[in-house]
Structure formats: structure tokens, C-alpha cells
Image (cartoon, rainbow, N blue to C red; front, side):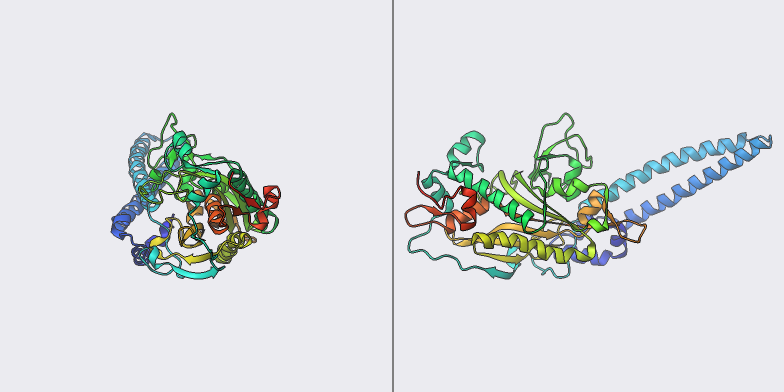
Length: 438
């Protein structure tokens, strides 16, 4: 969430940044200036009434102490109390309108983010590894997986419907190997602390990271006794997590951290659940776009002045996984029109898929600056200062294991239909070096 004082003082800049994102400032901000002015006027009037009430109350105490008649002043206090209650109701309504308005405004892009309308305006900033060459026509992962007997989409559809998968035998083992390899790398080499969070969260958590209220249709909500209503962020309702970013970031919601503990680096494996609203007809083949998939996530809590250096480090940590696996990729700097709602700057890592002859996103690494911290009320206490400040949050996939799984199948496929196991995964596969047809 943006800072109200910042929006008030920099309204033309905010409108410019929103237009760069492809958003209509008028639709998002509404009559911001009028609402803000009315709200401030009511707050001033309310405080004046409270001051008058307090002064009258002190006067009553003096009159009673001297034995004088305080009845007329007491009547004035009763009238003031009624006026305060009426003004408080109006002020609360205006405060809620302002909060709702701010909650729907996306983060503002960092100055280094290129202006653009769509993914076609993203900028490639790095490319690693040469795509493999084959002396046969490479196949897509869904054909490879089915032929090997390790990927079963037909039975998954019987169990759960479209956009689900069943992994068999070495397929299931490969997914588990990837999860363990990623967690071991991040904890042993990169200094992250592993955490295993709940896979269901409440509305407050989803509001904190920016999924609610705007993206409710993209989520799976559990049927609780009291369902979610927009603007009501309950502690006793439940949603399936769309990413580990949500529970891990909210671990410190409504907390103040000591500066000496920053940066805090956490990594988590979780399944992720997404309704994929609006994606009908997209990526219907294979396991590119699923309702349920696994992912290893990286989350950082940093001082504001360090957050962009930490973004580079976090992105490099994700890239290192791809490099250790020998998977060619490119790093893309997302333009203003293709960024996520909460992000100030995002790098996408796209892995090469020879069976489809294209690069596909496998990781998204973002700096949210103070946007999530303000929504979730996560602060830190700078050394030598009494006042707390909002910290910066970052996160990135390192990596989406399902897409890594399919990238291995497509890049390591052999002419006889088998798939070589990347060298770094052999110990996690019990020494197995090849996945052959069953």
C-alpha cells in the first residue's frame, strides 16, 4: 500500500506512474483530493470537539469542587458527546473509503523499470547457456513424460479435473529430488533459513502481501462458517496459498524487528494453489499452468537502503539453481505494464524449452519496497533511533519445481526416449543417472 502522505504530496507523480503501468488514475484514485480534504476537515473538527469536551469536563470538576451549579455545563458536555459520536461515525466512514482506495492502488515502478505496455516490452538483461542441439526432433515434456510412464494427466483429470497432474515412480522422485536440492543449496550455500509454513492462510495474510482484495478470483477459498467479504480481513477464515510468499512474509506481520537481524533470509517449500481465472485456453498441454504445483520460495526482509542490492543477490541465488542444473535461461527486466500489483521492480527468469522452441518463465524475483510492509505492518527499529520504520520485503521463486521438472525432461531427452539426470541431482536420485522407459 502506498503512503497516504506521499500520495497527497506527489499526486501528479503518482498519476504519471499509474499511467506508465497502463492504469487509469481517475478510476483508481477517484476524487482523491476531495475525499482527502473532507477526511482531514472531519478529523480536525472531531479533535476540536474532543478538546472542547475535555475543557468543559475540567470546568465541571472545578464547579463541583467549589460547590457551584454545574448542570448547564454538564448539558453542554452531553451535547458535545452526541456531536462527537456523529462526527466519529462520519470520520470512520471516510477513513474506510480512503483505506479502500489506497488498497486498490498498485505499487509504483522504480525509476530503473522500462516503460512498456506488455511482455513484448520487457528487456533482456542476461542470457546464460547455449540451448542444446539434437540429432532428432525434440519432444515436448508431455509426450516424454507419458512415454516414460512418469506423467499421468488422464488419471489426474479423473481425480480432480483439468490442470492437475499425477507423477509416477521416477517422476515423483525427480520432483522430490528437485525440492531437496533447492532447499539444500539455499540453506547451505546462500544463508537462508528454512521454514515450513501452513498451506492455508487467513484474509489478513492475503491482504498483507497484496492478493486481496484485487485478486480474490485467482484464489481458492475454503468454505468457512463466515466467508470473506471485501474489506473484512478475518483471522478465522481460510484460503489455500497461491505462493509461499504469503505465509512467509506474514510471519512478521504486526511485528517490529531489530536492525541487527536484517537482512532476514527465509526459504520455504510449499504446494501452491491457483484458480487460473482468465487463463481459459492458455497452456492446455502439459503442466505449464496448473491449479496445484510445488515451488521453493525465497523471501527477504531488508533495510530500505539495501533492498536493491538484495534483489540482485536473490535473483542470482535463483539463477544459480538453473546453472547448477545446466538449464539455459535468460533474465528479463519486466516493463511497467507487465509488473505484478505489489512490485516496484521484477526480474523474470525464463528457461529454454527445446520441445516447445521457446523460453518460459520459471522464476519471478521482485522488490516490493515498503508496499507489503505497510499493508502488513512490518517494521524495524534502526539502531540509535527511537522511532520505528517500515522495512522492505522481497521474494522470488527458486524455483518452481514443476517447470524445472519439465525443463529437465525437454533439455536432457535422448534419442532412445530416455532422459539423463543432471549430475547435481544424481545423489538425490539414489545414484540413478538415467530415466528410461518403464
